[in-house]
Amino acid sequence: MDRSVASRRSFLQATAGGLFVSASLTSPDTRAAETNSGIRVANPVSGDVLRTQAELSPDAQYLLEQPRAIPVVGKTEVLVCGGGPAGIAAALAAARAGATVQLIEVAGCLGGVWTAGLLTKILDAENKSGIMAELLHRFATQGSAVANQTGGTVYDPEIAKLVLEDVCLEAGVKIRLHTRLVGAVTDSNRRVVAVLTESKSGREAWLAERFVDCSGDGDLAAHAGCRFDLGVGKDCECQPMSMLALLTGIDADAVRPYIRETAPAAKRLLLELMEEHGLSPSYRGPTLRHLHSDIFSIMTNHEYGVSAFDANAISESTIRARREIHELVSGLRRIGGPWKNIAVVATAEQIGVREGRRIRGRYKITANDLAIGLKHQEAVCTAKFPIDVHALNSHGNKEINLAFKQGGHQPYDIPYPALIAEDVDGLLLAGRCISGDFIAHSSYRVTGNSVPMGEAAGLAAAVSIQKQVMPHELKWSEIKS
Image (cartoon, rainbow, N blue to C red; front, side):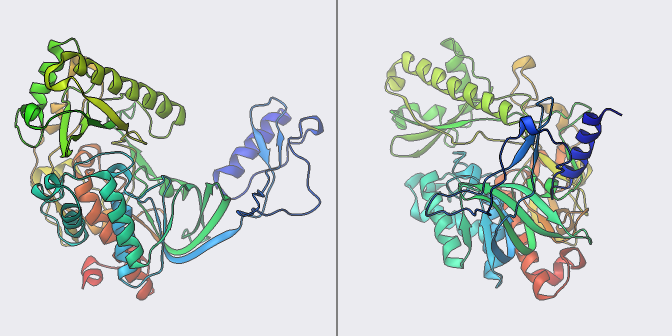
């Protein structure tokens, strides 16, 4: 076998576990970094970094990174990956149950799609109790008249940022922002024992007794070696992404028929208005919401066929989506009348991702569960949101794909075992990455369900530590009592 091929195979096998890489392929004339005489450590005050040493393969297709000591910077009882709606609830529930909790978030704020994604509407939240009800109350009382009138389900993202930080700090949750998960470590008993992150502070390790994956895309679980499902069909087609934006320069009374919460036909009327003036939004159900004063949010965009794990594709779709929003707003401005002063205040920091990995759990929620209205003895909450598969491509200019609704839908329970990873121990799941099929996911993925899932996972993590057992060894009745 060719030496470079054998070395590459060795390299790939070694890196698959995420713990170390092979240095067997050497080439003095392609050395990327010389070995230092001493070990340097990252220093956030002086700006020193933990330098990478690696050797470039002869074909210049990959680097062989040299082993290096990764500093352990945190050790808590529970670590929550992802500070979106599910992650907030998981961290709060675990901390309020007495556990020490570390929350790690890639964005510069808590809230995920609620804040960095400018969602502005929480779906399937009205029938929820616990932390979801608490957050809605705070969004309503600290927010605008619109937030108050909608019970907090239509909210101001800036208010949400403050509320979420406040409740987490009040509970004693340790928060690390601007930090991305890049690896996970399991021991010989297939138990998750550590995660690795990258940030301005460099590569760091975090230890915990229990972990909760609230990353949305199941990143922690995938790095830990869990099996997962993705999309639908042999091509793993996923629902489109959407970018949202904040607008100003509109009088709410003048455009009342086009505002989603105040007019049943608002989406259809807004689409007709756009098309009458030569505008063709990629999302065929454009949605305008009034937040407060003359601030609105809008969703008019679909980005089809974009992988949640392809940074290049996400970058390209983000640029396309932002351009489309500005072009549509400019088109509305040209209509004149109540639209003459419309302007973009901000586009979302992150494009909205509807679908990533669905991690294999100890129960899989299926379309049949939705059809029969599953009642489960270990239910953590009941989901009422309908089957909602946005069009998977632009053919036919559809808003949603009705074919997936044919099996029927009734309110159904989300069972606790669907929140427990099947392939490793000590790992819980919450949010849209829990265990389910494509159709079920299109219903439970909305954030009004993510919060009670997170609350259940965080509480289970804390109680399992107190009882000195793994989460899968507990019944939900033992946890919530």
